[in-house]
Amino acid sequence: MADKDTILAKAVERGESLPYAGALTPQEAFLLLQSDPSIKLVDVRTNAERDWIGRVAINNDQHLAVQWNLYPQNQPNPDFLNQLSQSANKEDVLLFMCRSGVRSRHAATMATSNGYRNCFDILEGFEGDKDPEGHRKMVNGWCKAGLPWTGA
Image 1: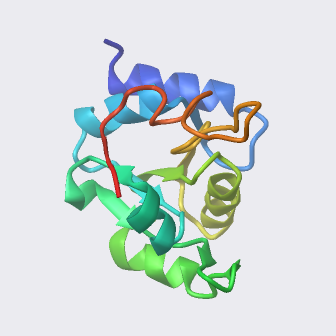
Image 2: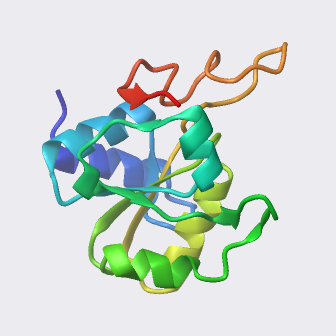
């Protein structure tokens, strides 16, 4: 198993042209969360997504639920940065996750541009991309990788 520094170095290298620190596979993110209890996963999905679809099963102190968009309005969360600051400081290692990896990139970019120094996107997200029939959790993502999660 790779150590924390090796995983982070690979993520930084993978994200060299990104506006935030780097990008992690779901497996790398899980290893980091297991290796260091100070690392935080920022789940930017809506509360409804977490309630109805499921959430990552990790130490509750590491799991931050900060919506990027609000449900059911599907409008940007105007308090995103304020809510993030209530649970994370600007030196924390933050791993951003959404459904498939789009909102998490936006959240990592915004956090970085507002002084958070160690923002990483979790590639593929919680459910991953859609398969040819339009179903998620079948192609890639946290769930497909067999990583721990709790269902709705």
